[in-house]
Image (cartoon, rainbow, N blue to C red; front, side, top):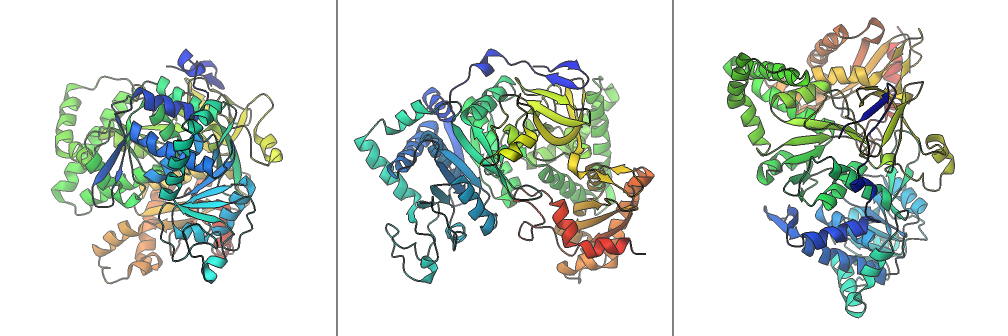
Length: 634
């Protein structure tokens, strides 16, 4: 499936009949999958005892339809909003599918969202029920005025007391009294209610599925945003069914694939990977524990995994530091192998046949180094998929050199996630691939990427003014990103609003500078470039604590506490060396003249990161204004 480059600033991929003739709803697509392959494994998930449990599609549906009937028994109506505040786990998936099967709409809430933002999201969406992971999520409702919210369903019932009048609970004490007057149930209690309803009305859920229409609201995803209040993106059934059939039409995934899913399901990328599974029918192993990704990859041995760039950066940095920090023969072999692998990768990118010598060298490098890395990651990976932020070219080349492609893609919450993706047989590193089948893209005169297609949202919830700012009457979505097209493939270069204009009138693209630095420096976790209306560019940098700790231990600093490393001259000098390397690769006006190493990593709790772990650039600049100002007072 190839894009049609009608003009240098426009591209589109034709939609086959399988894309245009799609199911009417997400719930119907799920029901079709269950009926097509009822006895095949659908999900694997940790059993809490060190092993993995599994569910067939039929077993999944049985549980989902009980929960859906439970929602109906509680008075949940079609297109009512039902929120989920939980980490990535099997219960999230079952609850979400139950909401869809009841013809209601899911409101997603990151589990690390601050209480005031939880209150805002639940209020703005007018959610009538909340699936909460545990008492910690329940506690975020204290003091909130949420007149629409009637029920909370807990995944983990770890309460010491339930809300006043809660069914099955005592509801005594101040702790309970501070909660809104909601009914609190467990997931099992909801399922029991559903089973009772289905015994009386066997077609209760089926009737809701039959009635669900393409333009019915299916999901409200609140974009955390790097500035301002979250905006609720309205995604309808047709957005999701389009995403499913469009991914299927690429022919890059099969029912025999195994996906490992750890991404936040409150994020649109995590959600769209579930949509792909429902359409195609492959197995998904789900566990949101980031600390266990490598361990789980070795245990599950998946064929593919979606991820965010930072995960791939960490794998690359840790593998490189582990292999090279001690020097000696091991480090030399590792460096030689990746030199060979990079030459092989670039030959493939240029569509060149590698020489016999290079092929022989690569076979040896694969035996000595690459095969061992792939084995650590399960040994069966056909490719990774990267989205949600730009992927560094150096990281993509590193994985490609090791025999593991990363298919970089692009999309927004406002476009249901998947709008572009590279293809395994024609991956062009440094781009995000051609448009999805049925999607169009143009590059505006100012360089902004605009797209149109069935994946584009229906607007922002309760916010027509914001909708009008990004969505034209004829369906074009202004992405806010700057990019260019080459041969029908899209390259994203920066965020439009992030471009820095110095006092000298020079423009600097911060993502470019930050990306080059992160590719060079394995000891940094984040860098925030600054310089709007300033006379030169500066930066704030946070360190990768584990990597710097290992470096310090080998460089005579074993007695320095970890929390003090960032403030030492030695670490500042370590980072300065990489800043020098960075500046050699930049234009004069882009170079970083001064920088500071911050004493701690950026966090969601401090407001420096969004719940989806993106840097809130303006918040960081405000938080550390005194440091930044000091750079320009000399």
